[in-house]
Length: 199
Image 1 (tube, helix red, strand yellow):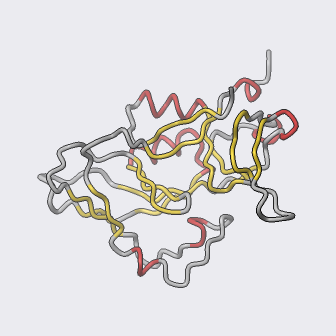
Image 2 (image 1 turned 90 degrees about the vertical axis):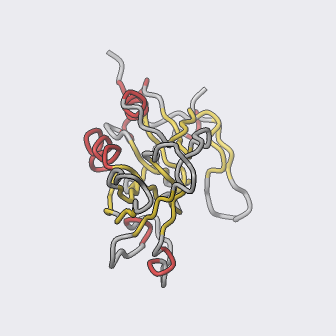
């Protein structure tokens, strides 16, 4: 039987802008929590120190659509619903860290779901560069960084059983496999757009 890591499919994900009429979202105490912040991808939430929970306000302002399950926040940090947190933890608990947010639904007819800040802690150097089609940034001499993942082959021994991770040479690119994509689609979780990184 073939090694399952060799036939798994991998995706980057980003915001699904096709979702319309969803409530506005605001990180109310962002400025306060970003004081003396210096990004470091190896630290939870890139080093943001949550001395107080982040406060999120959802505002309908005439928008009748549902609250999404996922919203980008900043620097690879996402705001995820309670049910998406449960899904991530069920599939690959070691990949993520979470910080509970305080959510304001004051202009909703009834409260919505709990939300969490989510960050991918696992970082892997797992791309088989010789077998992949990649484009590199070339504006910083001596620094290797991926600009574009055209057709990527993974190193199965490095990926192992991981279902979610960041890339060492592209820390802003968040990678998930088909196990997570299938689970998100099966549970009709909304907010992500998945883009395959293999031809």
